[in-house]
Image (cartoon, rainbow, N blue to C red; front, side):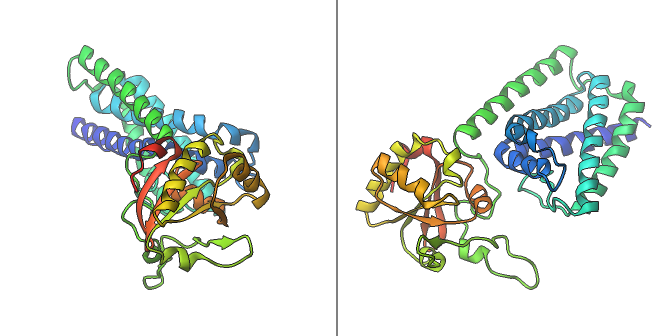
Length: 320
């Protein structure tokens, strides 16, 4: 029984640590996923959509901290019961998604590992069984070190995770698992391999006149794209920094555009206010959220290969 408890403890702890970490470095990705869950066609809790980001941060921190606490053996009773509560919530959400085919990717492992809805549900059933054992045999969960040591490990871990959250929200995720990561070629990501759907299947750029410029952008040697999925939600003052970078890019021969799902009239107002000298291309908002976790953000391409990504906060540090 002790051996089984130890196996369960480390399996659950590592699973929660990994799942929490891949979401911790990209909390906006989790927030977008919760917006899907809160939508009218899923849980119909649209009043919660404005709180998706703080909700996702709290849940991510709870998940990864429970993994730390279980691993080091800090407060086993509170930890095991909390794990049971949180996994039951996850179990319900994944069952609902799978049974009603609402959210095809639950985002349980962020963008690092993709599981089907039913695969995620069955994974959670296994975790429930392991966690139930931990709840029943919580007295066998002993601290790895002295009580004082595991307490400090827990609190220092929390401070470290809070700092990582702050950093990635201000800048960008420290690890990018998406198909638009630096070094990835967008055109290659759009190709079918057998019957498998390509990683990139909704990248389409359209000019104000309705012209498809996707291929032109992906075959141009030097391209700088300002990405703002929704201009009404953008940090508008960021365009003052972005203008310095885009002006320099234009002088060096870059093709410069802004990608957005907003109306051209909204961009024209910003363009006039900040004296911007580049044009707009329309793109799907969900695609733009996937491309970069900043609004606005900056992306550089060379013949379709992503060569750089920055939040507007870091625009001054860009070297073209």
